[in-house]
Length: 438
Image (cartoon, rainbow, N blue to C red):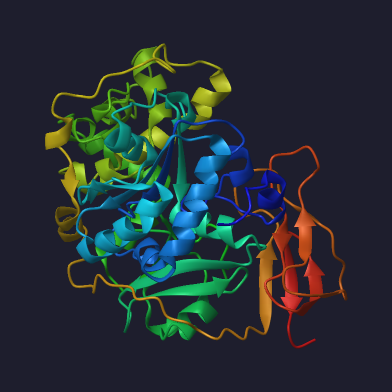
């Protein structure tokens, strides 16, 4: 078993949440928790990264989870995984038992991997509106994050899914700073034949702007679509057009609210009122302040709405004004009770895949080793939550794989960034550009 976890090492290695926005892990593990949960739900369609890591590196992942659990003093340690992975579950249980880790089975629904939902499914505890897992004695860790903890080396590479309209869907390990176009070519995809790419996932991702964009520590997937597919077109709709359509077409059916995962946990968020607010600005403070609790899972927009409107955007777009106002919903931080119909309104992943027009894509993603030999990498100095790193290297400097390229201010929330390969620094700006041929 590895030595006890050093939070200073975790910070210096640049470990952040690999499954979301990238919250620095050293800060997440600085407190105490009764329950440590490994979130292996991976509930977005077409993603297989976490499953592949558990199949290939299950012993390491479980050891990393155990390290995190011991660091926060957890008395209960749980792997939360979907019940459909029968063969993997049997192997996980065999490996987890000696470590006093239990395996909790989740249904195959979306968004089982939302940490509020995962915590409730595992513990029966509801994180209060605007709260964090720590408020109910829990800490949640991503599969890849646990792997990075136990390996105890600088995080210079990222595992991600390449799927959708591709010859062979795969999971790959790519160096941070690698251009998307080069990554796709390495995975056997011709960028010239790709119509659009969603970065991160079909539900909570974003539309890629250029094949020159690069892999970061939070990039979870590149999902390719042929020209004319309806899903990227929805992401491409400008925000003012989304709002204008909502004002003219929403009939207040409230399906978006009735299926909202946070509403079903008892949180005071009602997306249909956010839609109403597109046309009527004075709906009462409580109705609009509840938008702050939107988790942006996009279920309301991409599944619940019968008119294909954009309730998630209506909620999300009010968040800056809510923060600026300094106001808070009266139920923020208060205990809530789940809706009595919650268990009957889960959205099966098969239904979501069909609704989104993904049924024609192969839903697999075996881990494939690729010998990357990039000529150039552009490593961003800001690629996750926290203060951006400040460059510590200069043009012309030679660096070795694992060397620090930039570090955050000493007292700021943040982590360093590192060189993925031996190279020469050719430019320093928002990113450190590395050349392997100079």
